[in-house]
Image 1 (cartoon, rainbow, N blue to C red):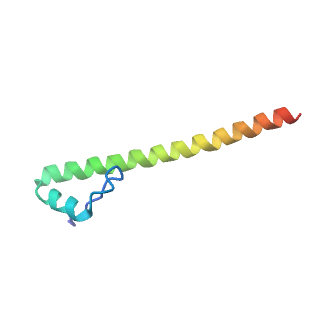
Image 2 (cartoon, helix red, strand yellow; image 1 turned 180 degrees about the vertical axis):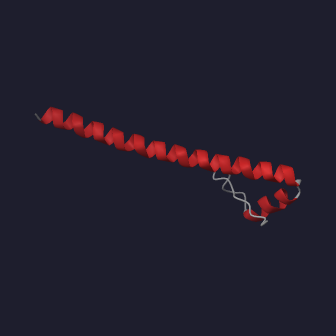
Image 3 (cartoon, helix red, strand yellow; image 1 turned 60 degrees about the vertical axis):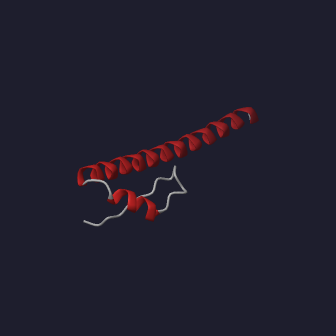
Length: 72
């Protein structure tokens, strides 16, 4: 099993080396839990970004429909 650490976007100042050294002090169960939580956070961030993009597209579409209605 490799010892990779994903740094959280909410903490841009934390380097991978610091994250690795702090993660190495965790037990296996705590380390697995930490990885799961970080993965979960990343998945939630991706879902949020996709929803935000969908909202933006729908908003633009609504604005286009309103403009077309005004032009008639």
